Image 1 (cartoon, rainbow, N blue to C red):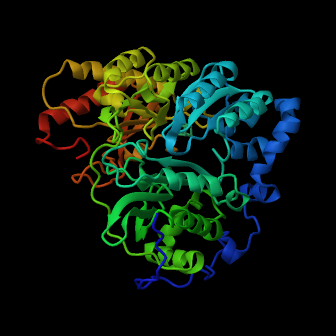
Image 2: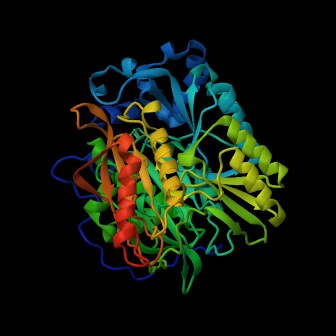
Image 3: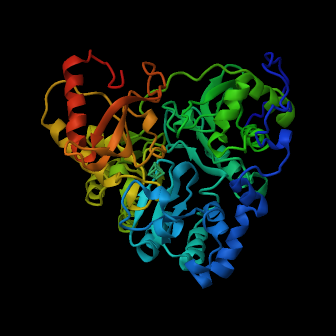
Length: 564
Ligand code: SF4
């Protein structure tokens, strides 16, 4: 590993000093001091979220749900991957007037963090077993490479942690104002065309900083994505911190640094700082950027606290200057942008590994699986000679290390479990957030609606001749948040109640069109735009998308993307 530490000439930085006080305090610790300016900051200042574990193990697991202090229940539990889930049967909309106990169940969603999406079959078997024993056989593969379970009783949490940790898994900082799971290329270390294997960098960042009290009180959630694959397969443009594999003409393989991406209400694509980060320097650079967020991030208003707002205020040149001068103590080499990505990066289907064996990208439709299916997949992999798999940032799974003669038998057996290696166009890319089944903020159903639409659209497309887009992403959210990245989709759907032709309020979606993350040199990353007034009822979704596909078939030029 080559550490790059020499001082090199740096571009002039824009803007004044990092420590300049603005007219109104923004809650920036290094400028305004650490006095909390809102209830969330007060909660975090009163007690570190990581400390709630001891109370869960020693108090709440014995006293049950009723014994949980409100500040822990609605605040610090997240530091250990626990959210209360929505009470069953509460309809969407108009929930803002409900008290928490009217809206939330006495059960939890539990998020298992899987840095880099890397799992062994033993680990998968343990998650599957926890699901069947403690989570009513629920499980979702998320678009951040985690696996989420539902129906968790706080009395079972210590035993669940014991089982997860016995195989090297955890729920530490899976939610909360902390460094969330580290997205990593799901083919790290195995793809023949890889520029650099990010596995050591991901492991070192997780080892040093996850669960570290120095970084457990950030202004807001903090998302990391690292890839060395030329398809740039970790949606780095919408993460707070991103490293993308690049070959520097002088220093060789390493990373191009991106910061300040994020979606939700004020979506913003990340920006390059124009620096090259060598493998050895990467954990320190992560620490530097994350420390900037901790020390200078805006804490007064929660909806302006993500790193993207600080980047927008400073600009990339000043951000780089502060990183180098105040946190690293040395200048990083300049870096040209990585070449355009080489494909969709979902790794669907069959691919040869660099060791000659094969990996197979599998679609569990919109990430919905079960504990039974996960345990079945673990056993199936072992029966076919594999002990490894990965989750992907697209709610998918990749089976690794299959010998050539086991590939087709494995694909046929995986299909029986609900994992499809050759999905239709829509199923391949469709993702959906948790939605009204379990999420307290949801307005409409997402998983079942999106899965039914994808199945129906693929059925119709199979019978159709004429032009079909090369790729089509259908992302479905249950509310105005953006857990399913609607602004990055060809068709992004934001759940809301709409008025139908009979004047009734029904489940529906506001439509966003034209979003894309780059998948080739022909794409520019673009955030989709709301089409004002364009709304679709949930039960009309297949017909609506079908209409768009028919218009594409009639009007698109050869090779034109759907987003264009
Ligand atoms: Fe819940 Fe909204 Fe996120 Fe969906 S997008 S999981 S409904 S908060």
